[in-house]
Picture 1 (cartoon, rainbow, N blue to C red):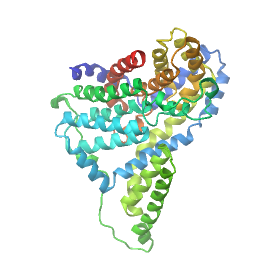
Picture 2 (tube, rainbow, N blue to C red; picture 1 turned 60 degrees about the horizontal axis):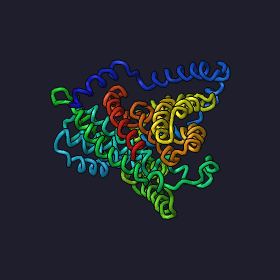
Picture 3 (cartoon, helix red, strand yellow; picture 1 turned 135 degrees about the horizontal axis):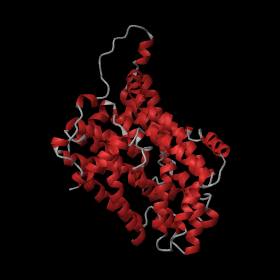
Picture 4 (cartoon, rainbow, N blue to C red; picture 1 turned 30 degrees about the vertical axis):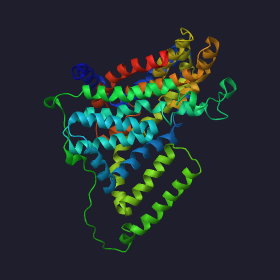
Length: 435
């Protein structure tokens, strides 16, 4: 049974996986040494790349912080908590809870990756309030749904190459989503993962005697205590009219945005979450109480993302990412290039956890290799996309918002994710090679 097979992975990770901040510091040193040893860069050059790139993810860092905060505030409203609890009521046992949270997370992540991260974590908490289930695996299951994002509607690589004027258009032209996201091989991989991932997560569930439970009272976010108004300014702080005027203005913009064929992206997801939270909390005061509870979980994002920006700068500017990709491409044939593209993308993703950024690094290597070998370019592009999504099960970068919402550490869930990494890697490799 997989619950026994997962134990060595869980013990290994619990014992040796450091805090994500220590992980990013170690990655920084590894990239420093590799850039100098492999690419022949001088220490001064590497430090310059690192320092100049350190703040390149400020916009993205704020977006991710808002994913956490706006999603938390929305879920903290009585209406949303009630909806999540009712859906959670469909699960009658710990095993059903694992299956349900995995399916919900997979579905939400296929629609939009930011949406999937928040919804999966919040729904897991709703389940934990109702059912005594092994909490670390429940949260790992919520995070595991993230694996399908790059094969879904918001996949950055397939959407990039489907956009006129993209940076590689002169080499490959514009490739529509019918050849990537909605191709047979990609949809087959997605469907297979929708079947496999919930089953694997369910089979990893330990017996009740070995499970770790969480006190449901600790998951009850916020309170609705009566408000006593003693000064004029508090009338504004508790004004429904003020909150609703601004909140419905935000919804009006959202409606207008989608009517004009606006796409689902991280900014609009955050915008919807924020203004729905303003409306559903009913008063600014209740919203601010929820904000104060949410903000404490964002510390990891604030401190770690700049370090990853520095790592990405070294990887791209030193040529290290290109060297890794070229090494795999050099041993490939037309039939095996998608597989080696997938593996190389998985390795690069450990150091460059950004789908769009990773394609910018790997496309100049993989596209000429595909053209020279006569390989299927849309399949190679999707192989890079799947490799980027795959090793997110190992890289704690994307787990930070989930862990912050759940109140866990990376070591609590990554053992389960590591076993899932091995199993899903085999499935995706077969799909890219033979379908």
